[in-house]
Length: 217
Image 1 (cartoon, one colour):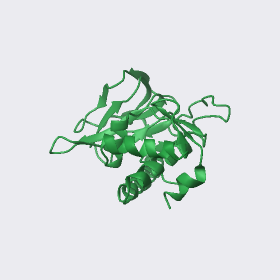
Image 2 (spheres, helix red, strand yellow):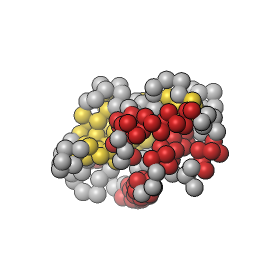
Image 3 (cartoon, rainbow, N blue to C red):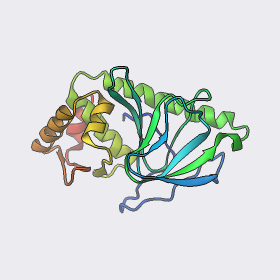
C-alpha cells in the first residue's frame, strides 16, 4: 500500500471509530509543551531554524514549498499520531501549516540528547514514504493518483471504510500535481461508478475496495 511522507507512530482509530491514545516518541515520552494552531496558521517557515520535532495530537498539518512561479507544491499531510519536523541539517526546507484546528506535541531537539539511532530510523522511514510519493506523482492518470491517495488515507486511519479528509480539494490537487477541477472530476467519477460515496465534502466512504486497489496496480 502506498504511503505519503509521514511517520505513523500509532493506529489512529479503533474499529468502533474512537480515537486511540497518542503514543509518545519512544526516545522522549514527555513533550516540552503542547501548542494549539488555528486553521491556516503557520507552524514553521522554510529557512527557519529546525529547533523542534512535532507530533500531531489532533488535527492535520500540510508540508509545502512555494515554487519560483508562485505555485504551491504540497509534499506531505500529517495526521493524528504522526511525526514531522525532522531535518537533515539545522534548517527547515519546507513550510508547515495547520489545516484544521491542530494540537501539536513539541519536542525541542536540544532536549533529546543522543538519539541518533532513533532519528536514523525515523528518517529512513520518512525517506521511503517520500520515494513512494514520487511514484504516485509519476503515475499516468489522475484517477490512479487519487485512488492511491484514498487508499493511503484509509490505511493511515485504521483501514476503516469511511475516512476523514481534513484537506481541501485544492490541497489534494497541490499534493498530487493536479488541478482542483481534475480532482473534483475524479471524485465525481468514482462516486458515479459506486467505488466511493461522499457523505460530506471532507469525508469519503470506500465501497469497492478491490476496484480502487485495481486502479493502483
